[in-house]
Amino acid sequence: MTALDNAALRAATGAADGEQDRRAEIYRSAARIFHRKGYHATSINDIAAAVGLTKAGLYYYIKGKQDLLFAIMGFAMDQLDEQVIEPARRVEDPQARLETIVARHARLITQDSSALTILVNELEGLLPDDRADIIGRQRDYVDFIADTLAALRDEGKVLGLDPTVGAFSLVGMILWISRWYRADGRLDGDEVVAEVTRMAISAVLNRGEDSNAGNPARTGQPAKETRE
Amino acid sequence: MTALDNAALRAATGAADGEQDRRAEIYRSAARIFHRKGYHATSINDIAAAVGLTKAGLYYYIKGKQDLLFAIMGFAMDQLDEQVIEPARRVEDPQARLETIVARHARLITQDSSALTILVNELEGLLPDDRADIIGRQRDYVDFIADTLAALRDEGKVLGLDPTVGAFSLVGMILWISRWYRADGRLDGDEVVAEVTRMAISAVLNRGEDSNAGNPARTGQPAKETRE
DNA sequence: GCGAACCTACCGGGCGGTCGGTAGACTACT
DNA sequence: AGTAGTCTACCGACCGCCCGGTAGGTTCGC
Image 1: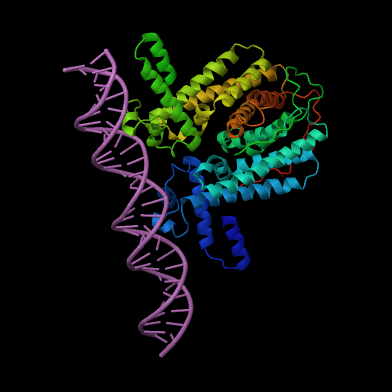
Image 2 (image 1 turned 30 degrees about the vertical axis):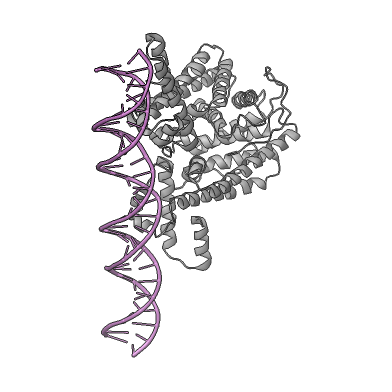
């Protein structure tokens, strides 16, 4: 269904049409425009013009605006699965695993933030069923991070941090990169990834002696929530 | 111009009391709906119905959809100025100042995230001049945080962290709260604020001896790989 | 009777989406 | 070799709907 799947299908079947390239180009263009202007502010005409087609011509390739959005989000979640979650799952040490997650996710965003950013910003544009699908996959991701934080806590490397709050906070830090990072800016992508990764780890790990009083002791309680 | 300004105006002039309440209610409703559905997906009719007016009746109070958005964002920036930046500016110790910023900003979001979230999510809905205004004020805020981090660095409490990256990352962590925090969840607002504040401080401060120096653990990413 | 606070009715326009084509490449049969 | 049929990749014209916004009242408290 996604551009990637189609590419894989073509490679497998040898049905090497240019059609799959065209379709991939459409998804890529649409993702870029959705990212820049937002889903609702983007018209089908905008996308058609960007790929050199009329609106009617574009409909030869897509089923509708919402399907297009869902396809892009599915592609983004696939990216996250393949390039962040799966590699991290193979790392057994929790701290190294957390570093892998943050570094790889941050790196994806500095490389091309379009699809991954749409993934979190345009959920309300989806049909309810599609939205449930995407939200479920996102929740799995946050749970994966929270489990890693819980493992760190069990090792004694983390004290008094709620894993869920920690996971959400790290995700927020990472996703926000797409709002301020510019490839042509002062820092290059590798530097940004390294900085953010260091911050994330240090946000979560214990400092030897807690010199930082003023923090109530009611922190051992894990809390399970929420939606979206 | 904003609801707040109008309230101030009313107090000053003693004029037209009920109208200002109505106008404030309209801004509040609009902010809530923009927050829930997004600016472009919200119609003037949605807002009118929410406050018990017809569309034409609503236009007695507002000048247009974009002005409404700008007014809400201006109100949100005023909130940030008055309840976060100004109080923090009076704190001289950089670490305490940073704690003030994070805690107060986080608290604003747990209390009512509508306007503050619109502030960052709907910038493209504004006219260029209005957008420039808001973006300028946002940049001032980030610079304020970055300056605080720079002061911490000069005290030796922070090593090797770029203040700009640090500031953006903290802001991302804070703003993201509005996406996952639910007032009726397991954690109450105070707990969330405390957790996030602790994470923010520890993300930024040096740990006594840097056991992590040189970045020994693999991050899972081979550096340097250009694309596009 | 006058202004504030609304309403009904309407407008132009852009939206997502559809329909009926058709140029051109390719195949099939004679 | 000619030609009829078929399929892919598109286009121009159009549809119904709803949008932001407005013109011109009407109601009602003073």
